[in-house]
Amino acid sequence: MKKHLILILTLSQSLWSQNNNITISVKPEKVYYEKDQSNQYLNFDFLIENKSSSNIILNTVEIAVYDQNNKLARRDLVNLYSRESLELSGAKPIESGKGKLFFNPFPIFTNVIPLNKIHYEFSFNSEDWKENYFVSLDVFPELYKTKTNLIPPVKGRVLVWNGHDSNSHHRRFDYTDPLFVKRGTTINFQRFGYDFVVVNEEGIMYKGKPKTNIEWYDDIADDNNDYYGFGVPIYAAGDGIVIDVRDEVADNRQVSEEEIAKNEKAYGGNYVIIDHQNGEFSWFGHLKQGSITVKKGQTVKQGEVIGAMGASGGSLFPHLHYELRNGDGAKRVEGLPSYFNNYSRVLGNKKTSMTNGLINSGDIIESK
Image (cartoon, rainbow, N blue to C red; front, side, top):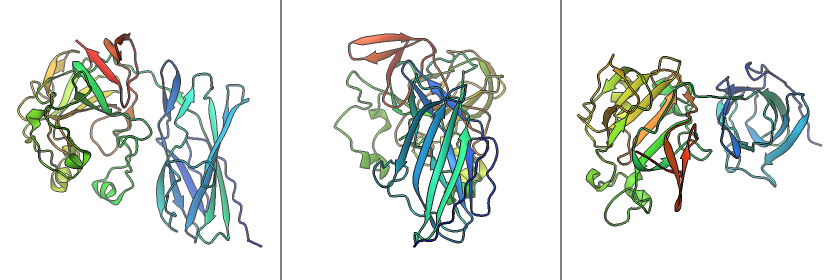
């Protein structure tokens, strides 16, 4: 008969669970969710630290969702046996004495589900299956309402090539990776980021023959001028004060660790950061060399041209990386949800005017 070690812990979202064996914390401590006409979207992580003497495997995550009266509204689960998920499939054991960033596997709920409290139960087993571990915690999400009146920073027909949905690289940014730990990164500054590209009527971002992903990911050179967006104006998404600018980086789609060691924001190549004076900051990255029209300390108004789309820094191709966040820098700031005004959502022949609208990966929008 297998020997089972059962550890049951319950904690508030804002606290760390303390135990000699497994510690789980919510990242970030304040969990925000977004909402559109149909769904509610959660974007947060769990940091799991294995303090046991065994390598452990996370095999099941169960949730119970409660309303404001603490009444059950929904239950769900993922596991390694019959309800696999991207988060669990192929996951390696968490080694003894080490940690792992685990992305929340329940990112979407319909609007009819109240999200006052979500109770999570994690089930682990030791790698040799001789021990089982159970950890539970509660999360209390808050609906974030963007304080700044924002408009899309790129005009014309724009594709959100990568947003912050559960499969996005912005969302799945593992800052516990040794590379980012060495940089001093402690949280996900790009949690709610977007990659905007200018496209034609067919949703293609470049001229000429079709390109393959390998051309971008293997750094096979192509011409920036083939892209419809290269050099198009970038506009201030909202009113504020420019607190940082960088403009001298070539549009060569490269960044080095030496550069990042000197400037934690160097990954973005040329950039503009605007402080909206309300705890929200806009970041505009990968701008074209020599295109920036604003200076540090300058007050800017929504819709004012601040630069042009480029391919500087860690850019696969010409695009704008935009995000709303709670501070400057890249090591200790978190992303914030952003809702936009004065644009249209393109749905085939139909265009829907949007106010306080949510956008994400795959969306096609237009603004003038």
